[in-house]
Image (cartoon, rainbow, N blue to C red; front, top):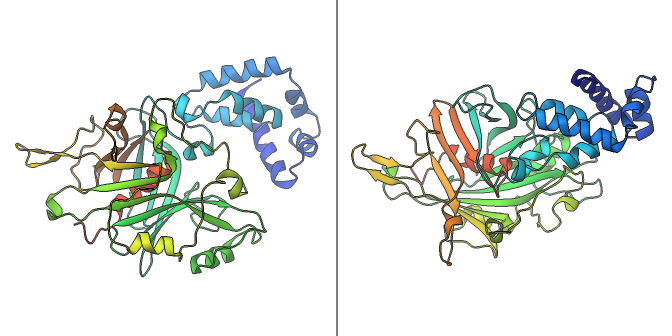
Length: 393
């Protein structure tokens, strides 16, 4: 058995999944009528698990790790087996399947990523770093496109760089700002069943009209709120920001704490996030947050992140943070986020960096994140730093 053979079987399997969705038909078409996939599917479970374990342990980095993904596409039995073997990023520190961008990062370290900005197309691409160098080819993870509106700015986030729209099946979510660029809301969007109630906003109707399958609408579920405070020192002073992670409990950063970890992308939003309320973009809740005065907000037991305060360097005459070599260009956009102790005593968990973002080139930025936030959430937070903040600068 070779990896090339597995990749070919996977490609045939994907085509049949799109046509039928039946296990029997899938095996017949994927095997080309010769029953080759059935042979692989009928391997003894112990033997299959041993083979997949060897592949998973040997292919630890991208692009070699694509072979692990190829194994999951051979047939259903292989898919279930590989999903049992491959651990979530929180434990393994690896991003394997597309759902990995929605799962919390590793607890023991920060996953190193970088963002490339294209000013002409107003797009941003997120890559997983393949080496310790500040720049490499990277493994593509997510893409975002900036859309200016009369009263706000939207950043549409997608799994594919060539297909960034709300009506696409690759739509992941969006970031929306208020007019001043001081408050942002992060929305997680997944397709719902045909019977689900559609949002009434104009943006939803436009997205609905562009969908390939009109019967499958999308919905937006708020997952985080970001706010920037007014900078009394003008452009010389550092920004102050706060992130309320609506779907992550404060207890997640404590010993034994757990953060929400979706297992797969689902057609039904309610099944994936049953406890997260959804609201329309024109709702009172959205208006109050985006247009209301900046206040210290709490959302029950939701995790609150704040930027780590920089120190003034007398010799350099600038505000400084220790990015451990991951940031090389001074910028007001640079930040590090840690958990806020709120009213309780600060512990060691409140000193641990959860997300850091900084500039290394004209249109190149590093993004390193870890538990309990996901790559999608980290990317959305970093996108908020790109937006023009009239009142903060």
